[in-house]
Amino acid sequence: MKKFILSLVLILYSNMTLSENIPILKVGLFSSNNRVNWHEKVFSGHTDYQIVKLDNEHVLKAESHSGASGLFKEQRIDLHKTPYLNWRWRIENHLGKINEQDKSGDDYSARVYVVVSGGWAFWKTKAINYVWASNTTKGTIWPNAYAGSNAMMVALRSTDDKTDTWLQEKRNILLDFKQQFGSDIQYIDAVAIMTDTDNAKGNATSYYGDLFFSAN
Image (spheres, rainbow, N blue to C red):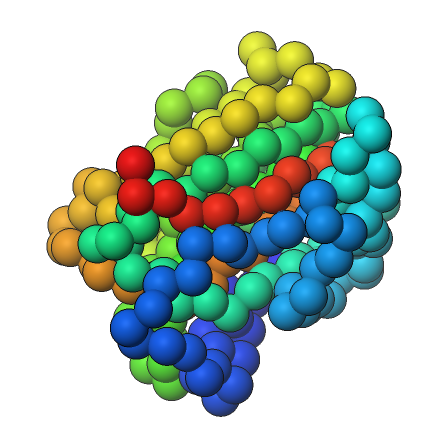
């Protein structure tokens, strides 16, 4: 988990064959009972990801017991054409009294990444990590405990949001990158999902619905 962003960059640099001209809006179609082109990166232990049926619909279930692995999809998205990332998620539990802004508590029941690859110049990589926090106040933004200011954490949800309840998200990724990094970043190179509990040795179960980009 600690090297997740760097690992994404190296894989992206060596494997991507992407279209510059045709943005693909669909990212995760778990409701179609598939996770095609979603790849797993295991760090400390293993988070179990599988498509299950919940409320009569296929969704992605993530279950972590003191482990950390993430799913990522290589996909170049033109934010000038489709700047909005849409998804829904739900969690079964918060992670207790952990310090999420410290390495010892850098765990989340659910998180969604958007990544801009720096290629082999990994120090140029930029990422925004939208998280369901356990203690940090909703709306708080801070640098990742491991990656520093190149990976900004955004607490979209926290303890005042209900568990076992689907919540819908819509973020203007173009605007968020400009606010966090001060530049107009046109393309992102990957989207990632992670449920991880390796640092504080906890347990988490969460669910992710479809992810897609839209023009508005």
